[in-house]
Image 1 (cartoon, rainbow, N blue to C red):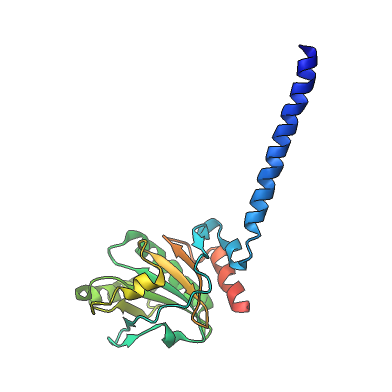
Image 2 (cartoon, rainbow, N blue to C red):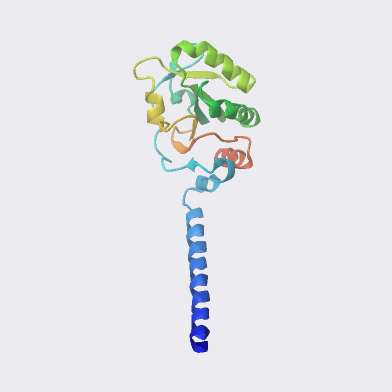
Length: 200
């Protein structure tokens, strides 16, 4: 029995040690993703998804406050954080003040938060009013078109999984990352992400 224990216990410890080393190696190899943006997928941005990185942004249109059709091309040369939201979406409304704070902190000729309402056309005035209230008047109002292809901007942007969904698009009109669900855009990770992309 003593001989059995003398070999079994060290073998068990060796097995545990090998398992721990394998787990550490696996975790470190995941965090060394070749996309540097992926390292911000933690904390407030834990759901950040870079799978579509490099994909050309949709050329579908949406409308501005004046009812004119525009596309992401209107923001060419600028990093944009597109946020699809609605007044009937509680998480969307909770998130909006932090998006406004991000716009206040980092908004410039190089960066803008673009909040696109997915409310029905009949609720346009109410949605515009709510955006103004939630953002303190900081964010401009945009809305999906009431044309049959109005929802194309959502689906082609990769935001078909629910609201809110935020998509980061670079100055060349290509996807950087997507985040489905509510996030705190004043968090360390969020500010770090925007600063890192702007510095590049």
